[in-house]
Length: 250
Image (tube, rainbow, N blue to C red; front, side, top):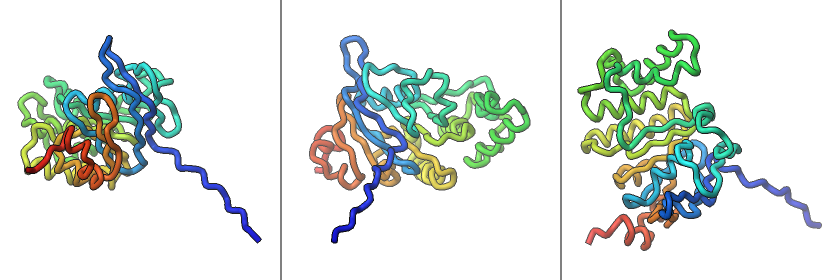
């Protein structure tokens, strides 16, 4: 006698990018790019300059309108939403070029955007200070951003993203411009954010030591197309990735 087994529905990806295509005039920046990001993981999006990584981020956050494809987050197609609704879907990001208001204090920079969620000024300030304290820069709350060291400015931008309490955090080259010691600290911060807040993190990064150490899943883009997709160990051994991006140690 045979026993019928119950069918198991495949898990729905936390973030599912499908057939994403972006064109700027006659230039195709992304061509049919598809990948998944699982909930609670740190994933990497890597590739040479001009590969389309930040373009992909700009589509997820609705700064760019793709020519084709879908971006499904927690079962909702983001491309069907107006751009201003993205923060309401618990998505936050940092930028390759730090985007802060230099004439404002550290605390006021973090408070930007929180008032839409908190009509109470006191509650907004409390959450902003919690984000600063998590990154150990709460003592700089009243300091103007202008003149702060670059690594601290990056930490302020990260604190602002954390204060939004996102489920998905997009980090665009977080290690850019940092020293070796600062990158070591960043590695611990990213792992801690994923662990302590249960956030899913997708990051664009060129520092391969950082990527291979903390990412559980890596997507490689080259000239707007997906070149590879898999575990760090497999990516490091992939001949096409080595030729196009990683290079050899010979």
